[in-house]
Amino acid sequence: MFIQFEDEVKSVLEKAFETSGFRLLNIPLEESEHADLATSAAFRLAATYGKSPVSITRDVQNKIHLDDSNLIGRVEVAGPYINFFVSEKYFSRTVEKIKAEGMDFGRMPARKKVIVEHTSANPNGPLHVGHIRNSIIGDTLARILARSGWNVETQYYVNDMGRQIAVVAWALEHFELDDSVKSDHAIADLYRRANQLLEDDKERWSEVNELLQRVEKGDETVIKRFYSVVGLVMDGIRETLKRLNIDHDRFVNESSFVTSGDVFNIVEGVKETGRVEVDDGALVVDLKDLGIEKSLVLQRRDGTSLYTTRDLAYHKWKAEQCEWMINVLGADHKLISTQLRLVLDLISVKQPDVVIFEFVSLPEGSMSTRRGVFISADELLDEIKKHALEEVGRRRPDESAKFKEEVAEMVGTAAVRYDVIKVSADKSTVFDWRSALDFEKQGAPFIQYAHARACSILRKAEAEKQEHDFELADPALLTNKSERELIKKMAYLPKILQKAGNDLKPHILAVYARELAESFNQFYRDSPVLHAEEDLRRARLMLVDCARTTLAITMETLGIVAPEEM
Image (cartoon, rainbow, N blue to C red; front, side, top):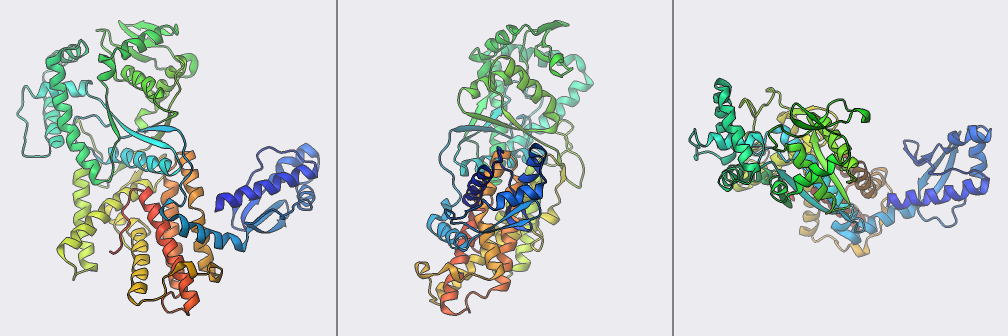
């Protein structure tokens, strides 16, 4: 409903400015602590028209008419600002809209296809905490965009032929795979041992390089060995992602762009730009005049392609499949993603939007797959679940072991997802499980508990056979401050989804979820529901049901389970 209110304000202002003789494209609107919406447009016009902002505002105020407006209640002027406030209809219509649309509230009309590529971790070991920030950001963005009407396809770009995979394939000839542990962990151990051996005997790198060359030339025996290695790791990675409530629609193999000839065609296409040079036998792309000092290596001296070359082919293929491409990448990919975008532009291929995230760490220290010193996502999730189980046991000691286990898994996963996504991607963060699992702080358990509380109120009302026919409820009775604030907060959900999707900032939704839960809790503290007089009780039960729906939508979009009890 907030979006409709915003549209009415824009329409009213556009007519008022035009009638007053002022021309201004894109009238600025801000949310303000003094109003539901405000404009400071007069500041932009002052210099152009040689009048003071206050004088301009007064002229425009006199031309504002609300005859055709349903959602604007009143307009006030404060110096150079024009403030707008919602009407009584705004509150009733918000509740009625949520009641009518249910879980479809906030869903936008259908749009075209977007491909969101995320995670895409090298298949040489299990995911660690750094990887899952990528996964959680990408998955949450995909969910937000789907709610915003986009036809979303999520992709995992599988590096099934790079040097790291060659190291593991080589390692399988020299070490025995431990099949008593999860497959991705077993491969990580092989990778660590192989790197140690190769560091001790550097001449053996020629054996690894030979494998790379044989794959590039289409050697079926070596290709099958690479596929076998990658398959083992990807099985483990998919299992980990499943625990985080993350699925990919499509896994795209890097090697497919070599065997199809797409990589060859990309190299030839880049050569035609006239920017390709030979540097010590390798083909490189000079980007200095475009502000990038480091050249992009297109082909090694032995004629083999690089990950970046194959990535160009992948993006050309993706660009033909969709209207919009989004990549989620770590901060260490800033340079290569810039090079990629520039080269794609040079060959007239549309560029992806790139969401760069800073690193996440644990209080225990840094992580490195190559050295074998890292905390895997599996270990983190197991540890979180263990502590969640202890917390649930303290809070619900009389419940069954099955109940405690299910709630612990649900709360643990939510705690990880929420604690990661609540921080803006451009800020580094430290994941602290103690804070994430604190039921009293405003994290995932706090939000989940608000939903469970709403469900509990509705269950009690039904058990007590209290009036539950919302068709008879009158939302106009919801006039308390906390009731109005909750309705306003719920009305804002579509705007939040729109903003988070357009700006590619999923943390905006996480912040909103916390505020929505707090707003519901404040209403619960201020407004008795089950013991209110009949008409008011019915209206408040309807509000509880709307809050339950809005919380459920928000959590579903964040990839978090909305529990009916905790």
